[in-house]
Image (cartoon, rainbow, N blue to C red):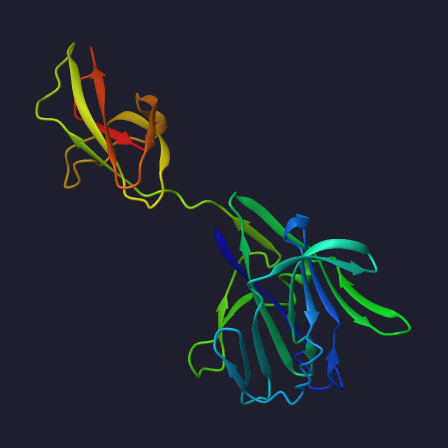
Amino acid sequence: MQTKFQLALNTNNIKSPAKPLRFSKLLINFNDPNFNICLNNNENDKDTSYEVVKDGENFRRMKTKNGLITEWKNIRDLKRETVKTNFGSEDFLCKTVNLSICSNMRKVFEGEINTDTPIDLKVVSVSMIIESNVSNLILTTDELDQEYSITNTRDSSWIEVVGDAPEKLIPSESIKNELRIIKRQPELKISTKHDSTAFIDEVFPLELEIANVDNENIHAYISVMCIDCVITDNPNEINKPLDHMKETLEYINIGAIQSGQSIKKMIYIFNNNDIGNKSLKVK
C-alpha cells in the first residue's frame, strides 16, 4: 500500500528569515521509528536565486503575484541508512535534497509511505539541524498534537501543482500530523438465483454466487440476514428499523477465492410462522 503525505515549511513573512537559511538535515519522526525520515542537504546545490524552476515530477519552484515562493519537492524513493545525529545513531529512510529556505516561502516536501499492513502513523516531531565545525544548532517541534498548532492558527491543506498554474490548495479537515493507512476492501460481486416461492414449514434453497473481481486472491466471509420488507417502488425497501425487526444473522466462511474466479454457496431458509415479504441482506 502506498500513501502520500506532505510536510510544509512556511515563513510567509517577507522579513524572516532576513537571509536564506540552509539546514544540514531535516528529521521527520513518526510514532513508529521504522518510518522515520532524514533529509540531507545537497551541498552541491548552491542555487539561492529562487527563480522559477521546473524539473518534471521531482522539483518545482514558482512565484505568485504577491511574491510568495512555493517550492515543491519529491522525497519518494528513500534509501535506508544509519545516520549519526546528536540523538545518537539511528536508522532512517534518507534522501538528499535542497534544504535552503528564504523569506516569504512555502517549501513543500511530498513523500510516500509504503507498508504491507494497516497502520496508524503520527508525526511526533520534526527537527531541523544546522551543523558547523564548532557546534550544531537543532530546532525541534514536538508539540504537533497541541490544538493551537493544528486548527487555530493554520489552515490544513494539500498543495498540488497542475501544469503552469502556480499552486492549488485543497482544504483538508483531517488532523495534520496523523496518517491512517488502511487496506483497501476487495471488490466482490454477489448475485442470487431462485425460481420459486417460499412456503411455511418448507426449506427454501437460495443460491449465492460470490465473484472476486479484484486483482488479488482473497479469503471471504459473508453475513446473511433475513429481514422484513414491503413491496413499494423499491422492492427492497425496509418498512421497520433494523433494531425492531425479527432477524436472523448468520456468518458464512466462503474460503479462498482466486482473482477473477467465483464460488457458489447454497443458503437454506426455513420459516414456520412468519408470513410476508422478506429481504435477504448479504454483506
